[in-house]
Length: 440
Image (spheres, rainbow, N blue to C red):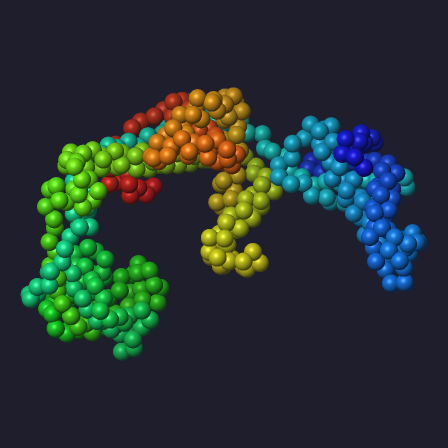
């Protein structure tokens, strides 16, 4: 049966169920199924191998005995697949997600089937001019540049052993053994470990006990693990650590001079050149974080103000996609079960709802991605690469990358539109707060 064959749909009806659930019932002449059955049987007769018969010589009655039911079912399914699109088109239906076959029946000379599907919800967006939004803003300050310079100095620091008590900013090398109720606990023992003091990398009680220790000294330190300690079995527990110090080292920072500049790849350049480079990089990072924060604020308020029935078919498909991605990232097999505490129901529903809202905005405002927008975004992306022309060609030749690029541009246009229409205020934050931002 050819795909461009014109099918005669005798009857197509739609029945509404609860929420967005619908059933589509279709009636056709059963002769269409018989045509597919004959074609499949003819093909099967040439390939099937049955004991006592030569290939291609199996009688039809024998084929019917073995394969009639299977071929009938497959032929009916094929006719459903070939006509379902026509039935939906006739009723002007665009189903949400993948429809499922609910039933297939032969009624005298008529083939009847029923499809279960969901409609897309009718979304009437709340007026954007009634939304209240605070746009987060920030700037790179001189102190942020100085902090980055300090980090670069730290990376080039040298360490010298000293014969004195350990103090903040020192590095010590120790053996330690921790016990709870006089039993060594998992992960509580190590040898010749370097520890930096004053960097908030250690449990507070433990670090306090290490201050003042000297090379060759051994001591016992009482420690109470904090209630928010990552290891559940240690949260809030009291422990004792036996510690032996091998040596104490003092840090020396390099001068911010020509030698330092050369050591970090800035030979024949000035400190101002380095500061300008740092500022450019920090501003790029800041722009990304500001964009993410403001995007989330727009998305959150759109979800909050626009409520509608969500197609569960789309939610289920999104859950499957999220589960597949999680298993891939965790190195799990497809058939492996998810951890009990890993659930994607809420995030899947939120993603589906947001996608439908954004699609509605694009439709209502007739938004389109112009070639000039694509070119400008490409220039922005490839500008950080030395071989920018090659990178641009790679993007242009990759349909998936270009699709992602257009989606990103459209998303940015939507965010700009919402901010332009909403009642907007500005929330000024520091650079550090933006870079470590947590909503609420």
